[in-house]
Length: 230
Image (cartoon, rainbow, N blue to C red; front, side, top):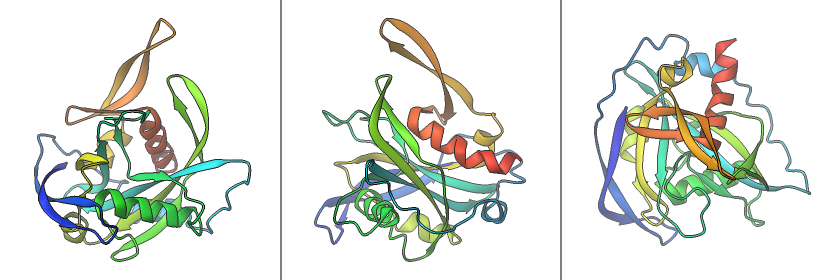
């Protein structure tokens, strides 16, 4: 896993202030990643067509962005900035955000939000390799009238995927590349203690270099791993 720490830098064309990144190694040991390389993931995912969003649903979209690592595929995770009113404030997440009525489709929402948050232009240098089943958003134990459409992208050039990262500090506090294999095989399994209506719950999570990945992001990653384990 590598961690991206921001430093002052350029602005994107959207006019939002962003910070350039310095990428450095993190203290995590890679394991045998057989079956979790980009070729295997491409073989198991079906790109298909972008499914139309049902008119009765509100959507947000996330991008599971993959790149080759020294021991297999890695996924880009972000830590959201602290925001009042954001139900996922400060949590580990995938880049993404809400669908805007002006977006031509949900795939465009995923690419637009990724550009705004981390500066990656997914139309250049990456390949859209598939989409996962919708996930209904939950906040404080209650289902929201919002559905998440996850799209999967792959960069074959890991250097391009890293060098182009530019964080929008108003939305993203940190970004890191984490190996898929240890998460998929259960080596990083942990729990997140959550109190709901006075009851303590231990929710499934991943411990990624001391960062707890749980909730919506854990559910999306589990859906990504499911076809790889068949």
